[in-house]
Amino acid sequence: MKSKADLLREHHLRSTDSRTAILSLFVERQHALSYSDIEQSVAQTFDRVTVYRTLKTFLDKGMIHKVLDDGGALKYALCHYCQGENHQHDHVHFKCAVCGETSCLDDVYVPRVNLPEGYQVAEVNLLVQGVCARCR
Image (cartoon, rainbow, N blue to C red; front, side, top):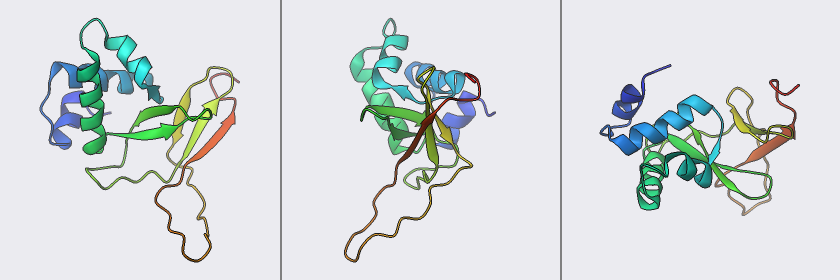
């Protein structure tokens, strides 16, 4: 795995305390995180605006992507194959019914969806629910 400094540099971002701390959360936990998860983890050091701006920057630069949870909750996950606006998220997200963690299954791709005439796909989200390998 690349260092946090290398990841920031690859995405043309300066290394700041907030970026390094928030990126560390994604690298260490290796599953999708909600805004409140992130905010609670860094609340002693950074305010809400800093957390929001850092997430927005990471999204804009292709470091993280949005993940919709089963209840419609928004989470964020570290991108492994994206750069800038060239996001590639045609993969499955898996939510464990035991631990509640949502993970990207990068090697499991979403099947092509054939829409009726006149419809245009902007984004496809596929969430599979079950029990993860760690909880089995």
